[in-house]
Length: 194
Image (tube, rainbow, N blue to C red; front, side, top):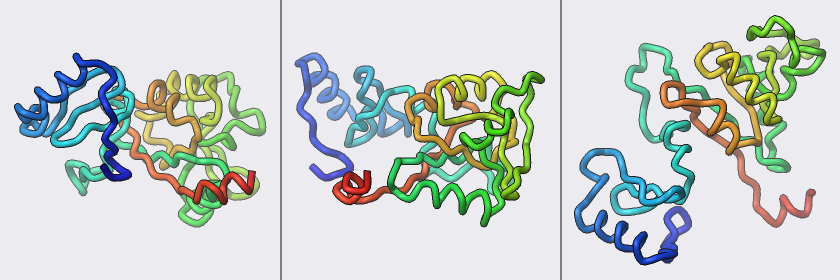
């Protein structure tokens, strides 16, 4: 076992039998897809990914290149902000150095998170950053972003959130997937800084 693909013992014999049968038959490997063994196990090729199945429908595989480099991808980059891991600095670089339009908690400040018009808008703030008027740091904010069609709108260049589970279930869909990137910090140093 390695860090990316740990060998986890099967919890029951029916699951073990399904995994073994899939491994012997090569299920999933030939179709480029995979097979769902249970709600938390996605079998692909010679290993299993232990992630909720809805992640596959909401997030794109970062190793797969979008179909055309000439057209803008429908995938939306999502920075998974892990607290105390340099995420605030990365979010500032995305917005202020790379001049990307961000969908983050800042977009809901100054009264923009409850705009009564019910439409997405890009607002420029005093710090010269451009933000979509949604709050992706709270569950109600992510649900509002979904209702307003954030992922399909093309208004945001990047989504910044620490709510990976909620974003996978409520923000993205199979036609408009997120492409996750993040910063990790050594867990001991991160714990000390909290």
